[in-house]
Amino acid sequence: MILYVAVLIIVLLLYYYSRYPSNPWKKLGIPYADPVPILGNISDFIFGRKHISLVYDDVYKDRSFVENAFVGIMEIRSPNLIVRDVRLANRILVKDFAYFHDRGMDVDEDLDPLNAHLVNLSGSRWKTTRSKLMPAFSSGKLKQMYALIEDCVKELDTCLDRVSMEGGITDVREVMAQFSTDVIGRCAFGLDFNTMKDPQSAFRSIGKKIFVLSWSIVARICLRLINPRLLKWIRIKAVSNEVETFFFNLLYDTIRYRKTEVNERYDFLQIMCNIKAQEEQQHVPKDERLSDTLLVANMFVFFAGGFETTATTLSYCLYELALNEDVQQRARTEIITLMKSRNGVLDYDSLNELNYLEMIIMGKLPLFLALTELTFARFFVSCFRNITKVSTDTTG
Image 1 (tube, rainbow, N blue to C red):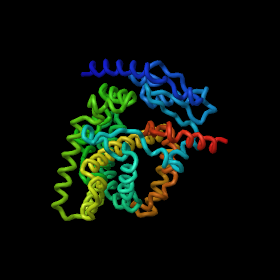
Image 2: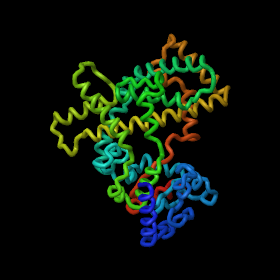
Image 3: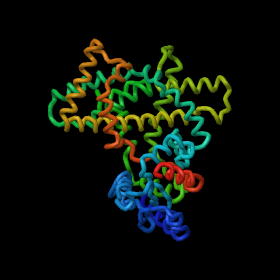
Image 4: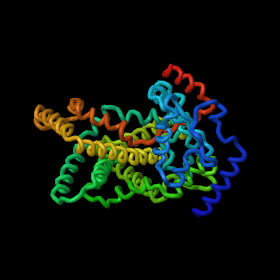
């Protein structure tokens, strides 16, 4: 199967390379990194020599583009624009986001249902789904989840005590992944994943499998960059059948159980279930409702994106604190002082007073990004004039 897909990719590459112009950036007069024939600028990623984020980083740091707000590259046959100017990036992500929210992911819900989440949706579906999910992240909802997080923190404290007593080398990244997985379990699913007590739990195991970069995934990326319609023909999924079955069974069983209980819950799943029930009562048209597939897909991306990014951020923060003991001591003193003033209890509101700790976390984020890229599509034709105008406004 792998050999078949590899041969097919090579044939398609040769076909598209001979039929279409090789570098649209050159025609538009945009500064660009010289691409390798057929593979463009991502040959190191395709052959497994570099992570895609390092490929982008090489272009970003190229001294020949130091005066340019953006640089064009080719990902096989797909043009991609790397934004280098922070003010331009801010305009794209905030003020002019209406032009750039579409990420260009062609979602096939029948083939790959877990891929049909908010990050990959476009147009009116993205806008409608976003408006439904945004209330779940209000400060009031987060405050309701604080007690759930606090329980996980207590379990982390117990876990660290146990690790300390055992001695030896500790994989802090794995401990943080277990902690963040348990937090997501409580806050999103309303379940006790217990990965800190049982590192071999099914939830931790499935979390690892989500981010395995197999050759089939690389092949899928290549086919999407050549022509997204090929994915429906070859039927290579972004999420494995094992992961897909796990999440659908987990959520269907959880939702079925909740219909029989009377206790009120405040987790993310309950918020989405309430939205779904409300839409059914109001007879919202089926094509505009929060479908079962959309519910499960967004729960999946909440799990995958939540535990991985949180674990990465916490791990690097702890690493930097270990290297800088003076910073570590100052942060510790701030926490102890605040706890003494609050009778040993830190509630949700008191977290806003930990200013130095917040500076540590915010200072770490630009150094070690948990998210390697944000891809926005379809600006190439319809929004190129807008991005050029934005660039002129910010750099002029």
